[in-house]
Length: 318
Image (cartoon, rainbow, N blue to C red; front, side, top):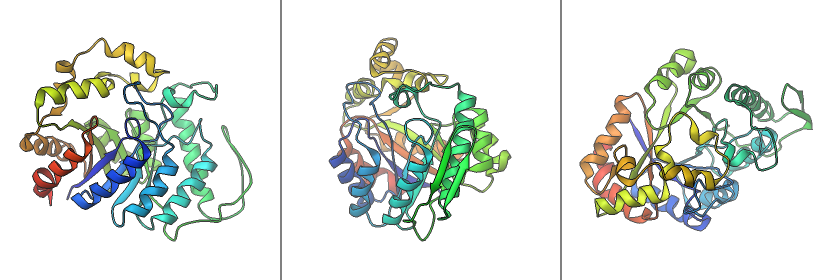
């Protein structure tokens, strides 16, 4: 059975609307939602980037049954893992049994802001593994001391804990991250279809664990309009080979966007209002081994997208 989720995009949506769209998505029949955690938007056109943990507090009171997860937060550079452990525990306490902590090794776009060095990918993944071990340690509720390769925790105890600890899902877009996720995480997240990543994850210990993927689409009544909106707001989807994890500021992403165009970008994204195209796109993810697909509507027409999926797409999978 596949679960269809909704992507809450912090990069181009203000916090009030994120809370509103979460409620609308639940009422429409989406079984879960995943929210991004950014300090900057990817490009200035998106023009938003609210603090995810404040937004999650609002979502906890406007939704009742829908699962909510971060996709993803980085607990290694910008925010210490001990702080993420507390933030996630509080959020899980407000959403008993509904919250999922999705973590990843981050993007330079967000993690450089305090002047910290941006390490190579293998180091970032090693830092993430140590961060996850600290989060799990603190979630036991005991007084903790820890001195590792990257982090120190001294006389630290989390008092507010949920009755049921949330699963930790790990994002992967490379072989090392997929192998690490299989060993230490409760589930996998990938940006789009990554067949090889799913296979590595399962072989490394992830067999039977949930596999989540983000599917980007652009619904609009006019296909030409949808293609242009996708390019205007999300040109980064054309970037390949991990480039998005390395670039430092929205300005450079905007310069890079000049190397593509709406037609090129839309060749890889479902655009328009043909329900069969949207249904077939989700089925591609299912065929690739995913049991959770969260759909990211590109651009501002979120209410229309939610209504369209409620009437034309979600019934196919229910």
